[in-house]
Image (cartoon, rainbow over all chains, first blue to last red; front, side):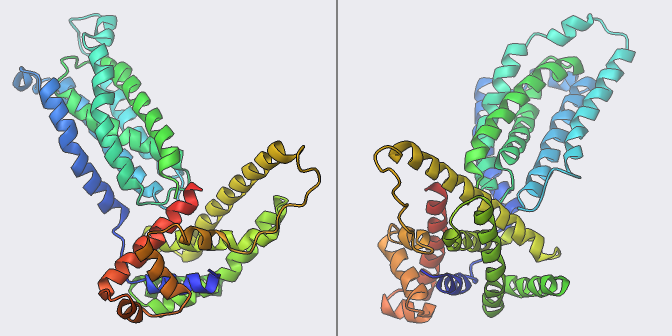
Length: 212
Length: 181
């Protein structure tokens, strides 16, 4: 096939309209969410004392951190799905959850605590946290990568890593409602390790899957 | 330069709005620029420039299938060249690896034999043969026989909608096969 023939063929296909990447990502996440929700409610469930916990600002802070991570990663993902886009000017969005968490740690330092710092940091659920967040995020990560395949990222591994952040953020939001460790120190240690793991998985798979 | 870019952006806006003639003109206008860039890239990498047409077709397919990632309020050229650069790097990497394998495998058994000359733009044509019959027939009818969608539908007793679907699927799987090779 010579190039003129190919061009004519492409022009004949101009009537085909692809949906925007954001739409594809939303559909894929909506399809994946029930899987993670099912895993969450069969294996973990919301902590029984949730009504009391909600009066604790450090419990609420966990959701601010995880949702800030998920939302900023979704925004960066959509930005990076364009071939000419780079992290420059957008990467700072990912610092939002870090900032909120740092403020939380500072806040906790200023209040009188019943438990010593190391006890709060180590917590009671570190192992569950490090396994549950990656496990819950896998279906979401699969969905996110499938949705983002619709785009054309210049650097597939970076785009995959951000998809990992996005899914870890959403999975951690679920997990935070189960976990009884509310100290920002616990979040900074164990949620971060779990998120790093999911980010690495996303980068590895994305490097292959998000090439266009 | 500036004028050319504005013209491209205008044509692409028309294309996105459904003007297939504008789209055709745009693709014809960008092709010589892409070809020159591909030849330069191959030459700089010490590769035979007669493979440039495969790269050009690869870029055109990507432009077509990813055009929904272009922001209609942004200029077209930076988007186009980002895709072109990506595809050129991919192609050089692939060829580089292939040549490396060739040297390892055949250096002793085939001393000094010149590499077989490759016909220009053979990859798309070769992958076309691996498509499902329906998609291949439709693509061939429109590309090679220059038939319209309507004529193609009549020829294969399909609806025009079915021809459009087969055409788009064919182009998408062609691109996927080129990427996997």
